[in-house]
Length: 102
Image (cartoon, rainbow, N blue to C red; front, side, top):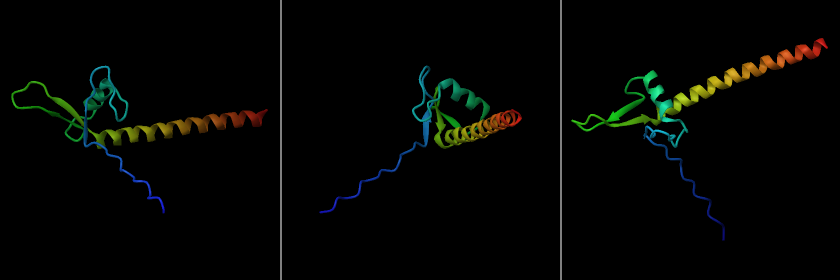
């Protein structure tokens, strides 16, 4: 008797997630409420977040779109990698020049 192949469950990603409570971090990226508040301020508009509010209420629940947040995190990661690689390349070239001079 052969064994059945393992069942694979696709990763379920949210459409949106709630702005974390003060002192907490979001469960998807580990970013703080302050980080996301600054991100929202720098990227105003309905493509990044929205407030779910009932009519007549002064306050609501801030939801961030997962896809927009992930795209931002990926862009920042790519930018960091480019800067890090450039710095390492410069460091390597400087050490190579010093070795050649010695």
